[in-house]
Length: 545
Image 1 (tube, rainbow, N blue to C red):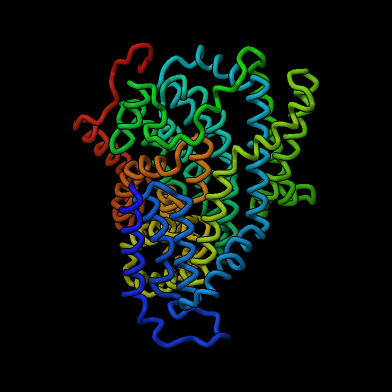
Image 2 (image 1 turned 90 degrees about the vertical axis):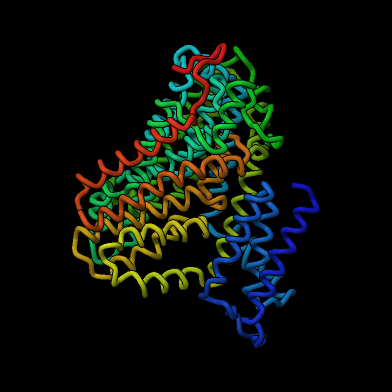
């Protein structure tokens, strides 16, 4: 988009804000009053909507997020420019970076970036890619291997996003799988698989939100009704085996296959990094062992923060764990052990290992910037009372429509999660409301599952979601490319899931609803295939079967 068009878009948005929101500020608030005049109204969701729309229009995420933050600060301070500018930093950027959970995730990002740099410099990534090239002979095999690894790493979505992308990227590159497709595979086996895994940080979060019931038992019973998560996994299998590609993803995949262009768009923020990896210096064990150590120590770190040493069992330890601290502790220890291992193997010198620390940090700077802005936008949206607005609207209208309640819950959760970029925040708000309505047992299970599924769906679609950001980082894909290519696939599953929840409200049997939903998804995708939305069947030098 050229500069004139961008300026026009920004001016139009600014004009809309002034025209439609200004009446709310006709009565000037006193200096000591901190609450916005639009607190708890629809305008509380306006800043993330601005950021999302701008990101999709301009293809530029940093300025889009910052503009959303500015809009939110203006609304929060009733258009007091000085207070708004102060709010951006004191209650926005500084507050998000002062949050212990956020800092833990940033530490994990930097440490993981350093470990990846070590594996690359030692030649482990190149050796693994060469081994995988011999063992995984087809494109479909590479995609299914990525899918399989994503399922295996079910403990935490952040860990899943970054690990799967970094491990599988050399393999998918060799088989001409676009970075956008890799990012989709990573994202689709992160939150969806965590949301149906009883031993995961997500299960722990859900268990902690539900009061008055056995949270873990409800979570397990809700798994067969978690249509979006289950159908997303099924969709990967169907489109991979049938070679279906549609929407913007089709262009990316065709460019990767026919032109060996893994990026498609001019913006290639990570291009060339793999070209610096030495070939023949390392062995496969130099990648596999650090990854295994990382997985084991991160799991142990989470269990440690959950009180496993104080006598808690594994399930309770996961339920009480602090994933952010656990990932930081585990990854930092894994980094130390990896450095010791590479030094003992005499693959790298001590100075070469130390050089990887700033290099790993620099590799994660784009993700850190986007995450920081996304967290800041989420915090300012919270200051505007977005939670109160959504919960009040939902509680006031849903109780009288019990048969359609699962579909309503799903739709509301999708919208809230998409606008705020947080699935945890979404089910943290909506689950207590659903539980308080007083539903019969089976309908309660279905509604809880619909809330969890909707939270994952909105998070999956949102460009300001942290897991979406980390998926594009792990796959080294342009972030907006990832969002645009993933959106049609996610919306397809969301539409089928919505219909499935309408059926579930009447039938209330997972044995019927889940097979029907799977059949609907297969039918929709097969129709899409018949319309010609497939990748080429034969490409010189690449096996597709």
